[in-house]
Image (cartoon, rainbow, N blue to C red):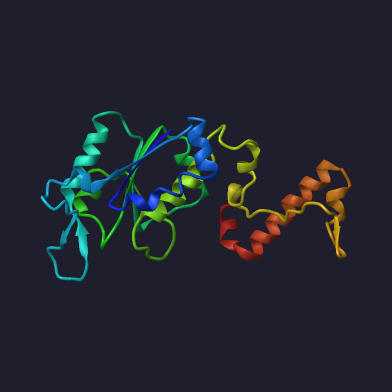
Length: 226
């Protein structure tokens, strides 16, 4: 899988992709991540990437030329399955979206900034608009890092135990069941007996029941899809 990220602040993305699971995925050559500085494609003598809006209002707008140039540069070299724009008014990112994107070959993520991007970029290039929640960030770089981490861990071969990702919260529209590890008794706080009885069927049933009850209590909205 190849992920190209377009940003005006590439420094913000240096650390998230050089540690932990994403780093191992890169080392295994299961994913390639390239960060492109939009300023490098600006024809403005000062390398500006923002300008005032035609209408009244506070804030600057990301200009069309450098973004169009970098997208066309990348598309001249390969086809892309999705060109994603991170924006507060996009569809909310969830596990189902992460699952879908993890099956793609090549994607571009455009990090929003300022008061947004010239609408013509959205009209002519963007195939999917995504928000990571109902709040506003200073820029889309953090949102891009969140999405990449969520997507990459689902790529076959990235996790040492591939079944781990399939039992994460939000898979099957359920939150995760409680988990325990040794010791079985710590200061009188005991692991549920059923997890120690060796009966796989009973244990699986208990996990499913617990996941359902936790979801019902904390996120009942997820059960609408069940």
